[in-house]
Amino acid sequence: MHDLTRELQQPNDTKIVMLVADGLGGLPPQPGGLTELETARTPHLDELARLGVCGGSIPVKPGVSPGSGPGHLALFGYDPLRYVIGRGALEATGIGFELQENDVAVRCNFCTLDADGKITDRRAGRIPTEQSGPLAVKLREISIPGVEVFVEPVKEHRFVVIFRGDALGGDVEDTDPQVTGVLPLEPVAANPASQRTAEAAAEFVKQACELLADQPQANGLTMRGFAPKPALPGYREVYGLRAAAVAVYPMYKGLARLVGMDVLGDAKTLDQQVQVIRDHWQQYDFFFLHFKYTDSTGEDGDFDAKVKQTEQFDTAIPQIMALKPDVTIVTGDHSTPAMWRAHSWHPVPTLLVADNCRTDPCQRFGESECLSGGLGQFEAKFLMVLALANAGRLGKYGA
Image 1 (cartoon, rainbow, N blue to C red):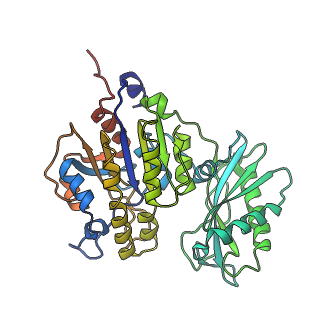
Image 2: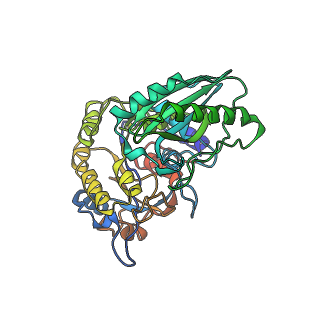
């Protein structure tokens, strides 16, 4: 697809805004009921649904539940089955760590272990950053012969570890069992080229648990997303766009950087994120705004909290539309139903608004309405092509 967009891209002064509510899609708590999005009062999103065209985006393939990395890569127009990026690389890049060719990055979670070493809380009670940061720095005391180790705080219970050395592969299984009441898994190499990395990870965990033994909450850790430095073509090259990202969480900043977006500002709230876009409106053609909390409340299994966060997301719409973007997209990277407490494979409600889009009968922005929308059910990797076409940035194919 990128070969085609390189060929067809044409200059224009139009602007595209992509608003991503992480984990937007949901499920009703009982058959025939309303989802979180349908329960929420979202007058501004509903107005966009009436002005534009709706549908359901499929992040990877039907029936496949995606991680945040593949989900966002698809939204950015990159085939998530071709471009595979581990979460560790995303976290490291997101905090500005410059990965080298012989690095393997790992996204880590502090967790709570009981006296038997079993996990009682996979996120250490979502320990606040001001407490977790010093603990991550303490882990810099760990020393592994023949491997250079970097430990960097991220946010709340998250931190990132980078192993640097020769013959380090990135194919190591996660140690997070995804459930409580069991021991963390051992780091297992998926192939001989990654065996040295698995051994370094095991030694890191051993020393880390000794250093954290006296902590009331964060007395253990799990490791996820072992990954080397990836290489992807950039937005300027494949789309001809000056692209910018405004995100709060480091991982999404990392995703944006990896596809050649400039990461703007250091916003902490949704209003601040919109202000950053407003401040840089003239310098860029494409803006990606990421809103995390529709996902985290879904993962917590809190239906009502996800409803409230969806309503909070809705409040940003008038501010964005006041900037008069030529194309506005609202979507999510995947569905996170509160009843599942996890990502799911369900298509994600998606809407596109542009002066020349073909509107459909949808009157509200929700899963049921989007089932009958004009965009239909489509693979998310085609969303950027639709955005470019509606922005007048794609020429004709063929004679």
